[in-house]
Image (cartoon, rainbow, N blue to C red; front, side):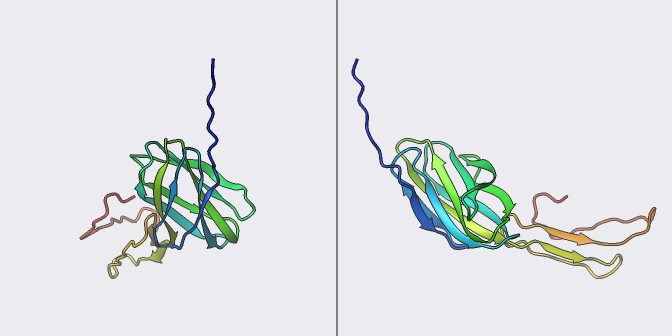
Length: 166
């Protein structure tokens, strides 16, 4: 029996990413990490989307804090998932989004990282209509109003291009 082994350099591909601007990394081998670095502040909410993914299989994504520890669970981008729900960062400094694929021989991953600022406002019952425009993936709008218990109310929407409202 003969065993043939190949040694492959799995040095990470380090790339800086700027909010709102796509950035890409090309890996040559399976398990070679792509590391997208960015500066952020404690409490900042960010969303991540794949622009291009030529890997033959899923790509594991994780957020690494400035101290190198992982925030939350590892998430997966695959053929059916091109967007990861927003996360709230818990430290100030240089963060890393690390992407690792098991695909042979590797591939290109282009991602876009966005800083997400949610919209919050009040609305006055029987007052003027309020509108909003969501401009960032993962952004939410929340309107509050005051009514007494048992007082009837309804919400009316017009010209909405939102696919789902809750």
